Length: 227
Image (cartoon, rainbow, N blue to C red; front, top):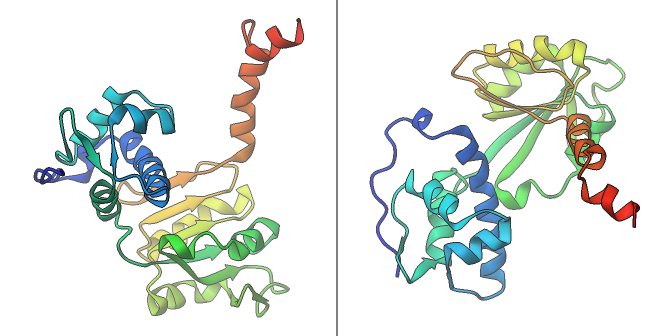
C-alpha cells in the first residue's frame, strides 16, 4: 500500500516553514485515525479532518517523498510513522523552561508533553524567591547555572516564559549555551542567529487576529446578530 519515500530534501531550509508547521497537524489527525481503527485514508479525507485541500496535502508531503498510490490513498500507520520520523518524534527531547511565574508553572504542570516525547527536565528563574522551589517535581535553578545545567542534562529545546523586557537577554544566554530551538511566550519577538529557530507564541495576538472576523463588514457573526 505504501510507497517507499524518495530521498529527503538535503537541506531543511528547502522546505518552507509553513509546510513544517503543518506536519504536526497531520500527525495529530493520523493518530486519531489510528485510534479509530482506520487503516487507509485519502488526501480528501485527511483534508476534511484538518480543513485543508487535498492538493495542498499532496504538495506538502511531496517535499519529503512519495507515501501513497494514486487512487488507493495512504496507509495511516505507515504515513504516521514516516511523519513522526521526519519530525524527530521517534526520540525523546529534553526541554528547559526559563521563567517560573504563573505561565511557567502552568507549563511545568502540563501533562501533555511527555506522551509526545518532550521531557521538561529543568527550570530557571532570576527571582531568588522562586529559586529552590519544587514545581511539578523539578527544582527551580538560578540563572547563573543555566549553561551548566543545560549541558549537564542535555537540554535541546528551551521554553521562554519571562516578561518582554527580559526575553532578549534570556534568548541571548540560551544561544550562548548552544540551544538551537526556542519557544517564546514573551509578548515580543527576540532576535537570534539564523541557525537558531525561535517560535513566538502570543495568545493576545491570536485573539486580536480573531476580532477581525468579528468586526469585518461581512463577518458571519454580524450577519447572525442582524437576523
